[in-house]
Image 1 (tube, helix red, strand yellow):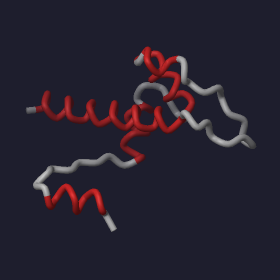
Image 2 (image 1 turned 45 degrees about the vertical axis):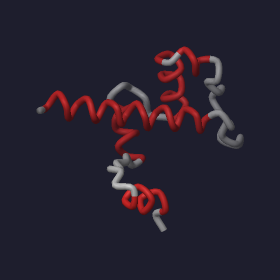
Image 3 (image 1 turned 135 degrees about the horizontal axis):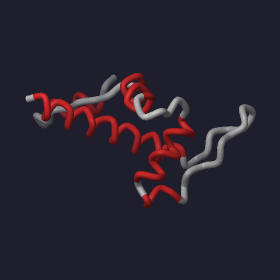
Length: 90
């Protein structure tokens, strides 16, 4: 089940989410088509992450352990952009 959703509802916390397509669409507008390109852009935007940008992976290699940090940063960045866009529209 949706444990986070149920917990948020039981505490009257408004929960919003983004799907993968929304995150990809946001970064596509900034010229990023791959997770590596997104990680590189985020590494430039956030100095704290720059030293963790993984090298471009070969198709037969596993994804870098550090990529989860960039996935989270990408979702947060796309979400904040959506919130800002909605605020600017009102």
